[in-house]
Length: 158
Image (cartoon, rainbow, N blue to C red; front, side, top):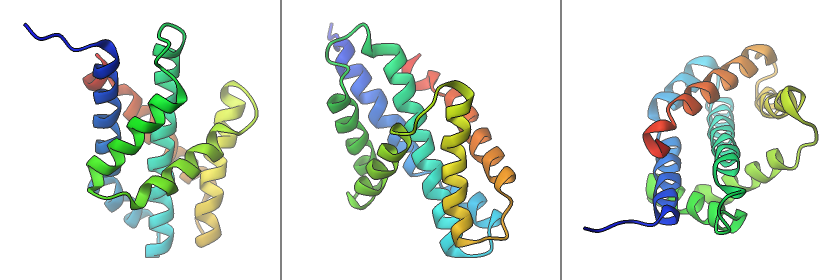
């Protein structure tokens, strides 16, 4: 019988989750419905994708970093990149995602205060493209997407 290592299972789970994140056509449609321009829809879509990847990194960190020496940032980022390529079929989005992820990971604070800053940073980037959008509605939209995503992580890591 063939047994996969925990490391290879986690790598595959990260890649599968990220591939699904970046290929979410329903999210793209919803972002278009919420905004009045392709540019602001694109920014909103991109920020939600980055927020989902950020939440995945947080979960991976909590589940594996303390217990496994292989659960390093290098391991996680390599598998995020592979997941993006698998989901989109190209590398174009890798640098955008990793730069956005870095921006979110470097934000100060803890707990809900930090989450508010993180969500606000994404909402502000979208509002720069379409000032008439409501920041609180954008934050709620991002938060709802993250909660839904985290709830569904069991299919990858369950």
